[in-house]
Amino acid sequence: MRETFALVRKTPGCLLLLFGNFAITFGSNLVLPYLAVYLTLEQGVSPWAVGAAFTAKLWAQQGLMVFGGSIADRIGTVPTMCLGLLMRALSYVLVVTAATDIGAVVACGLLGLGSALYIPAGKAALSHLVEGQAATTSIFALRSTANNAGTALGPLAGGLLLLLASPSLGFLAASALFLVLIVPFWQLRHRIPHTPAPPAAAGTAVAKPGMFQVLRTCPRMIWIVATAVVFGFCYVQIEYAMPITAAEQGKAFVGVLYTVNAVAVVLLQLVLSARLGRLTNSAAVIALGLGAMAVGFGLFGQGSVAFLLLGVVLFTIGEVIVDPRLDGEVAQAVPAAQRATAFGMVGLGMAVGGTLANAAAASSFGPARNGSGYWLLLLAVAALLALITWATAPRRAAAAASPAGQEAGVAG
Image (cartoon, rainbow, N blue to C red; front, side, top):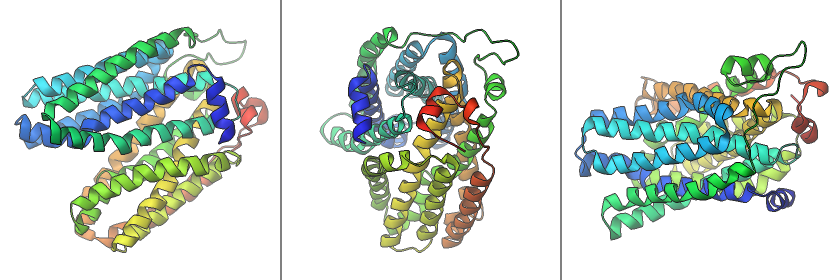
């Protein structure tokens, strides 16, 4: 981790991107935990419209992320990041001013679209700054730490604002924060200039944006996206199934679950990222992370508060292992001119996996109807998916690896 911090200090623009990620997740979490309540009670939006709005947000953010990445590869990462921040800022103004069902759906859809533009562009910009460094995966782990620090602190500040001021103030404060961040981010365009795809050498594929072009240039992305589907299936259990089970201990325990997860991510990233960065077999590391999540699911089926908390910690260990490793895989395997598109493809894979997770949780086998049986079934499914992920990983020849991949020594 000391090497990672040294890399951040000596790389101009890197600290700004990491702090920006903290500020963005902090601003978002000022209001997102209370968004459904605000739309329903303060704005009078109907429950069905709130559900539709959240669905629009999910698919605009995850489903359109690949198109956001493609735009970043075409016009540049910095302009795309700033456009995404502008859309996020406008979406919160719409939440406050549009007190209709349609207005709520449009506002949440715009919020998701802003994320779809910002996230792959931001990851591509960070990978550009640390291009060729051995600590690439550790940098993405540090990015995840910054995100989760904002996730942990944002709801606390948002709750304080609710007590001291009008509920609308939090949304306007988040909007203002995003607008302010555009100014320093825009200055990064001089450090991260847009570099169009170079002409292809004779007999090689052209490295240009687009999902099919990425797959043609880097077939390993098929495995990476498939792994993102598996990870999305496991990770999104925290949004639907896990709160249902946690609420059996009291509604307030759901908030405890999220706080434990966010704090554990911050602490575990600092402890584990450097050690995991020394492990070169990415498939085995990812399978280990998925296996930890599977064991966490099994503990959730035991019912007691102690097992629930331990299950969340194991789930978080898996999250900490898999999330930055997937980002590192993209950074090391995909040419810079296609990288934002590739990050968007990972987001699309997670959206597919998350949709499957929500469908499973809402089914007759879900935790509301099947109780501990759901978690025991999920333990078996997640463990099997971890084995399949490890067994199907393609090996990457040293000659085919990108310079960053050679530098980091990451193998299949």
